[in-house]
Length: 616
Image (cartoon, rainbow, N blue to C red; front, side):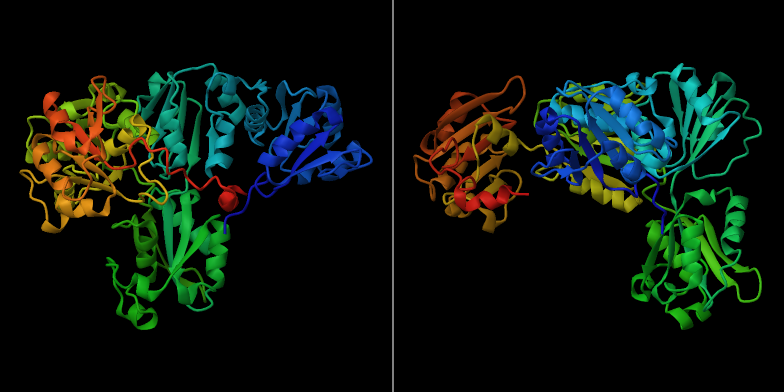
């Protein structure tokens, strides 16, 4: 299993309070940081009394994950100075002055997390975090924290880390090469400084144009031609499938596999998972490889592996294990990939060391084409998720749904991105355009209004994507019914009155199943949100009156959250008149039900019977 790093293997947060004046603030922090212990010299409720702070620090400093000191900075420094070792070992130390105006990182600002702790403490207390680290103050990457923050390994060339960071904060031209993806690469793409140029392959970089080079890659390259200082970060990206004889001798196997991976231009530092079949899980080799590669272990049953097609099946392996290749099937299963980087290799180092291995790229870490179906809001361009906005900023092609999606959303496009409206394009033309980008490993966003799952056309698109083997994901949006509830200041579910919301449409050109006729749905007296039906409002009103009372509240919501938004309230008996008198047709949502503006059916969640819901 992966070894835990120095700062991660500690859990306790110590809070030292020199003066009881600071106790209320210390308690605020303890309430937010559950493992925190407040140390005082006096016996006080919910605090731990100690006779001497210097002795406390001396005996526990290297055991603590973080120390928050309330008092003068000078006292804090003198107290911890004899205990300091290095930024890789010391806990995060933050000093807060006694009246809580400032939170100051003292040691382990980056590696130990004191800078982030200071910011967190400042937010809790309404204080100011005094950060002196230059890269933090300028919003630059703290490169020396990436190995611990993202679980990467790193190695510097033509410099050391401190020299590299010194040049980086001078904002010299820097090339960034990303050949995989994970939390760390996503962060780097989102926060790319203006002096850093991003590439997705080392061969694309004009090396003479840059003074620094950062490479995030699980691949081995030839680096002899690189003269400038550079850092290589090795992300965890590979699944290593293992099969072996019973009681296989593990001596030298890890080194042998590493050498074979290097021959295939793969870094063994990027092995994330050691994968095998359950009958081999207790073999010494599996434990040894997990430690050698600093990787976790994944174990599968023959039943889980039996459907996986392997490139090199073995009848003998099937007789013994029930699968045709343990190494290949486990690597493919773990990686959720269809292809191997290294097909099954047989190893025989010495007597008693017979094994097989295969390597696959974890699909979530592999940079490849992706169609992102993104839902926006019903109109207001600010009503899009953070993830949706980020996808727009990263896309090479944005294909948006014409007049239904605000054009302002496309302004998030990066320089050089292609932005096209799908208005006037049939489905085949849309697919052809998206596929032309997809086939070049470029990112595509198909931008829809509202939530894509409601009354959209994504099912037809997904059928095409499936047919062509194109990978895609869906990011939810905000639907008109949610915007309507917000604009109407209404809770659409009210205890003991209505607990169901129905999202539907009237019967127009699009056929409706008989069981979903409006008059049948209306029998439940639920809150009903009716889309795409303003042009048939007379029919809608007639059906609803078969179940709802004529005085039932209604709201007619035109262009919700757009600048042109108009809201009309009334009763069901006047619904058709409201729509016709105001010439409302497209982009109109009809809301029907007692929940509109209702304040009578107060929620019981805040009564004494429900207080347990809000306890920790």
